[in-house]
Image 1 (cartoon, rainbow, N blue to C red):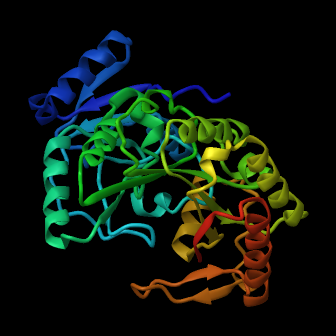
Image 2: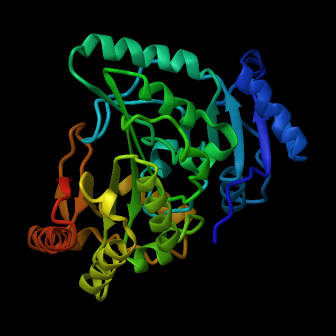
Image 3: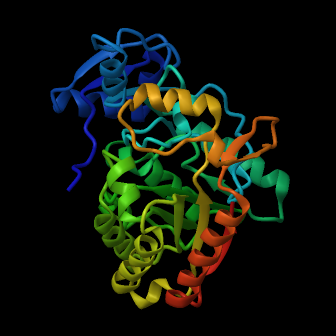
Length: 342
């Protein structure tokens, strides 16, 4: 069992103490006996302990920085939402394939932002601009927000904020099972709670530091019973020896443990494994012993929206992955909605 995250070291921006949440978090971490240091900016945290790159990287992943989000312009989001809502950045998980390794670069520490009311005010402006259409906000583009929320409750605050909204919906995805404090949130069905799931082989080899599959599924059942709309992201879909059986077992397990009430409105999103050349370099530096297969010659190069290409599976492999997983979803969850395969 993976225990809820507790930082080994905390940095606080002085400005964060002008907000009630900043003061609360400082008192909480003092009470827990965690070392607290000051930093002028959450973007400029230096002196993370460690003798070499790997030690510094691992220590950064267990460092929490409490700061103020100055840039309130939200990024336009992934296929699943109109905007990314910035409540946190960074993650304590050690997923070898994660794209955050390249986007976070030299800042793998975790940041949480205490000016949540200002962030919600900005979300309100975006909703008004698009009214009367519904605007969806993704809270997990740059972090696994559930992984720190038992400490900060910013996500819970956001769930209740959108629960009262007529124009907004919230969504996020997690690999952590620490959801108990979110079960009584007044979500009013406006938040889709999604879990990242995968074949056991992928979780065991490439997702250290995250909750095991059985615990994620158990948490998903609790979330469904609490009335949240539920979703699953199967990602990255990864070809390995016996992958057909591995993914079949995943859906059998899900079918066995998911209550009936969760099945009417469940969504699936599917993302095949991909990597870029810069990501490959960073992954091999951060996880030198990884078994992750990243051989450009075996892949197909696909141009991205911003001129940055990525390596995906060959067309016939992609077709087989898609057909196989869609078959399993239709077999076990005939009422589910498949949102996309990419």
